[in-house]
Amino acid sequence: MNVTHLECAACGLRHEAQRLHNLCTKCGKPLLVRYDMERAGRTLTKESLRGRDSKKGPERGSDLWRYREVLPVEHDENIISLGEGWTPLAHASRLGKQIGLDQLFIKDESQNPTQSFKARGMTAAVSMARELGARKLAVPSAGNAAGALAAYAAKAGLEAFIFMPRDTPRANVIECEQTGAHVTLLDGLITDCGAEVARRKESEGWFDVSTLKEPYRIEGKKTLGYEVAEQMDWQLPDVIIYPTGGGTGLIGMWKAFDEMEQMGWIGSKRPRMVTVQAAGCAPIVKAFAEGKQFAEEFPNAHTTASGLRVPKAIGDFMILDALRTSGGTAIAVTDDELIAATREIGAAEGIFCAPEGAACLPALKKLMAAGQVKPDESVVLFNTGSGVKYLESFS
Ligand SMILES: Cc1ncc(COP(=O)(O)O)c(C=O)c1O
Ligand SMILES: [Zn+2]
Image 1 (cartoon, rainbow, N blue to C red):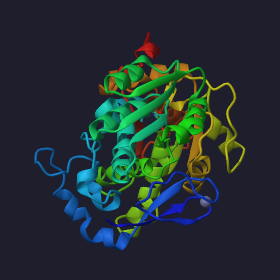
Image 2: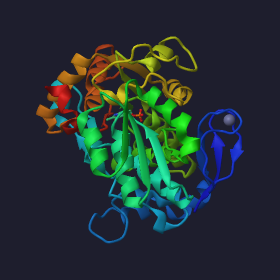
Image 3: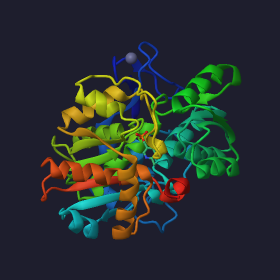
């Protein structure tokens, strides 16, 4: 294993690896996993990856564990995998033609186990929790993270305790129940669910796997960045548009780009990172516009894109830093716009997007109209989940 230690994203304090951690013991901010990148790069090379791309063999290779050298978990037998990652990067040529963009791509995360990109985070978090001896895992969730945790915990033989807002899409609730989790629905938002986990975890003996409150979900999510680079033949796109709730995928990709640069795979140029949020819950958009380093809690959060209903994100300062450093931006779109976009993408490309993923399209159109994305630039939209989980949104 190439992990050297964990490091606080805010104050830099070093924490020992291979022990269960939540937040920084000094300042309460997220911890990031650090690797000996020189050592990792000895066996993880662009060439070695070519031999790891077959879905057919019994060896691991077609899931995100193909990037094994830059993932945590000491002993292979602790890896809990359901075949996550290595999803298609579709060239959206018909949709691109309609909006005047040749190089438009959709990273289709609906093809993951439990139909969302949350599987990436949970394969890493559950594997590590098992390796480090946790038995009961608790999570507050907008829906998809819950479904993923329930599935990976089941596969690991661990117990999952899930807290979701009562109005979470039905599919998320049912999938958790059917994969054996303990499900509690609360009147309130994901932040209220998080507070409930925090209140009870000590007495119940739960390990809290809230996004960015443990160090490993982001490690799974960062493989989005490795995959996009590899699938684009190591030429990163000009623009990445990402539907942002807690922001773990965006922060994860940003980390992956740094790691790839350290291994000499890419240069210092980065895609412009763009956050999309729903107009009814846009704390990052507001903080970005106001030039703030942290985002305030967004009042009366509401949107049918339940994964974007995150009024306060603990990684807000990391999201905002990536947006600004990359020359990107943050954009809000209305629920009407994102629902209409689901059909537009679906009819053009055959991908039934989650409303969160669909939100990327109206954001892109706004950027093009403002001249902030040029017709000859390459753009990747992240469809983070499947529309099948959101039947209520379309009826
Ligand atoms: C489909 C979907 N897209 C996007 C998000 C937001 O993801 P993140 O927390 O990584 O910003 C979520 C979170 O629940 C989601 O379920
Ligand atoms: Zn700290």
